[in-house]
Amino acid sequence: MKFLDQAKIYVKAGDGGAGAISFRREKFIEFGGPDGGDGGRGGSVVAECTDGLNTLIDYRYQQHFKARVGVHGMGRNRTGANSPDVILKVPRGTQIFEEDGETLIADLTEVGQRVVICKGGNGGFGNAYFKTSTNQAPRRANPGLVGEEKTIWLRLKLIADAGLVGLPNAGKSTFLATVTAAKPKIADYPFTTLHPGLGVVRIDGREFVLADIPGLIEGAHEGHGLGDRFLGHVERCRVLLHLVDGTSEHAGKAYKTIRAELAAYDEGLAAKHEIVALSKADSLSPELLKEQVARLKRAAKKAPIVLSSVSGKGVEEALRQLFEVVGQAKAAEAVLEKPVLEKNNTWQP
Image (cartoon, rainbow, N blue to C red):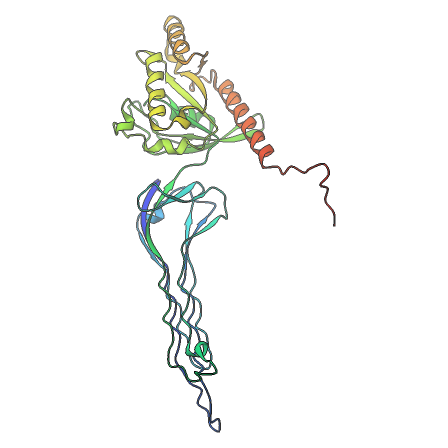
């Protein structure tokens, strides 16, 4: 299945049904009076966060969604039926924007969340509604209100606990394949990874979700390479694992290149907790390994993890550090969400 993280669609809610103009006419009833019913409500367009989805590919082949018009009112005071809503099922982490691409309508992060994007029009009143003591035979009825319509953008930001960043061929996909059951494409040329990937890491009987995005290059914020559009998938991560290729010309310069791209994209992303690791340590001689570690330490101002996904060196250490940060973040969020009861404000039936 192809991965799609952005889609532009047109949505239109249904118009309300028109009210009816009708008069009661029955045998032996001289003064029947008006009995036109009201119109039904038009269907709304609703976005719903659904489990089991991880892409917006459904909106690649259908871009127009229109709800049905409400049923018109009828005689004998019969109200028209309301039309059903159109449900747009989207994966967790989907953001909905206005046509300008900047005005946020909703951010769906939990399964079951629903938001009304376009509200259906109300049905019009039938002539029975306008009956008064001075106007006992009204010959007017209202048309239904027009339903809302708009063009919106759907953008998916994967929800993961930790994210992998680095230059192309830094060993991100190899690391993901080593620690999870994911099977990303791995090759010895740049930009092997063209779409973000997810995997579940299990360490010491615990687990967390790890995200891998395509590699960044210098000038990615200006559109070079694959650009920085995939960085949105690690915005929700609690911690970043920055992999620096040990076989690169200068590990410190490679580290600073990625840090500059993160800062150019979003200061909040650059401020996230970061764990630095020198990858492909098995391909380096002891002298070169020592030199690259020293360069990376000077650039990052912290001691990096020496890591090799092939031999397994440093892998468990990196995972434990990632889980430690993820666990602390989850505990802090749980404390903030827990309601605080005042001492003198105890519950009473």
